[in-house]
Length: 211
Image (tube, rainbow, N blue to C red; front, side, top):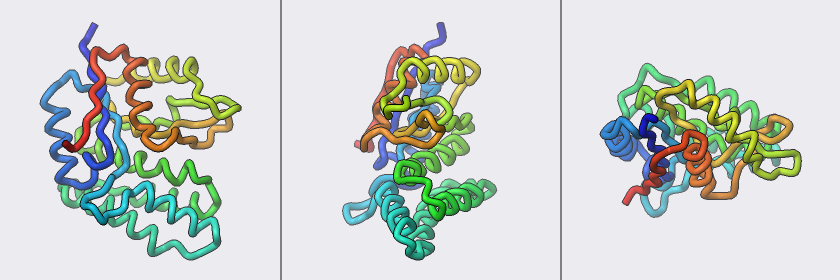
């Protein structure tokens, strides 16, 4: 059986392009690091705001009927700066931004809002590495009571990843029995990493931080 490692990187490890480049070096240094779990961008400096918290605030404004254009633009700027500094200018998240903004306006839920940090960061990381992107909502499931569905998830994840050589899966969320995005508790990307590791029978699960 092919040796397989699952690697998870936290928010401060993926806070900006400089950190992305460090992470990419670590991943590409070992060809057995086949499956990557990505968190949302964390703090770049002490006074900085995590993207997940920016998304929560943005959604709160949307749900109260306030204009959230300025707040949403700040989120877009975070991601666009990462893309620009990575030198992948031919790549754009504009279509995803429009979908997310529309979903906020139509009250898609706090879990959906919070999960978009990992979702967008995962897409960037997959593009930068040349790995496939797999939306966690398609392979991680919760039952009608909101509990994690281990059996359904393990079956779906194992099946999907058996056809993929290398992939990035965003952490922190999955989908509920109605197909809506549902998150784990804060720090849930660690759980995602363990779920992926189980599904692919990983030899090692590496949980990295920026230190």
